[in-house]
Length: 423
Image (cartoon, rainbow, N blue to C red):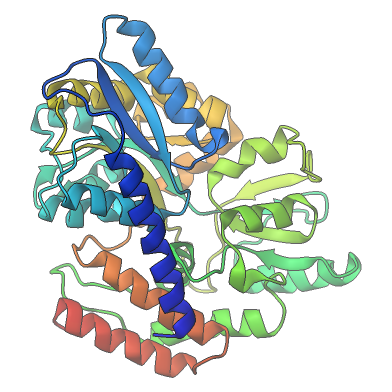
């Protein structure tokens, strides 16, 4: 592990510890109190917390006698959110009732006995939710969370400069280079290439799109080295030859979105949340009326694959008001009005199937209705957090030229076999 990575992780853990210390000093709620439900959501700013605050306000209006829902934010970065939640739950703290569970944390958090079994919601959730979202909330045959928001990587493109969206990565690079030359050096492509979870998802989209799998159906390692190498070399070439925007290797979501919105890139891989701001005239957007959206490209001879993201709502096993927390989760995940509002006001993809019928005239929801059924979640394994860290380290080093891609993917495969077994 590099010194820079060690420093970064120490800093993240220090931040997490500080937040836990703050949490421990909050006014204690009486055991069994029905006065308040604390919902922890990702993001410290008002925009990030907007969906949760809207839903909490609606719940509070319908429950004037309580319990009142209150929203608290964590870091916007998924890696740091997980660290904070893991510290709180491992300590058995009861200051959180409901939290947003990134879909790749389900197995780990359930295995550690941090989640409430939502068996009483299962039949209703399965009846009304997208099947893929139910899958991400289930582990070892048990529903551990309720689907809340879905997500999938999509392609944004400058519709004023590009007639139609490219259908292959090869076409994207060719068109991006040509238009870049015509537009005084606009970058062909931008995404979040920093060494964090977002990089893992991009690499998996390339790897999956070439026919690769990390794990087999029985949970053992698959990870074909030829596909893994091809995906890593694609990223290495794109980085070396200037297909990726300058600063790609340090960009997280906000920086990638800002680059595209300021008119500095032709194509962008991002999540759907940015669409409303770009098309609705955000204060910093230079691309209003100039943005198209499409499925991610495929490699020639293969089909397109988007990584599935999203958040589910889980109830803490240490909550002092589990029954009310479960009812809140039911309200947020199965209410047609609540789920439709996620899309209409916040560009968040709902998990309620009926919402897509209600929003069939919305271009973003129409696209997601096409993309989500085939979008792929990260492997369901309780070891995902350490696997993700290793992918981040190896693929970042490979595409930035620190190590040869072949060495990186061989290291990664050895780690997977040692961690998961098989192969």
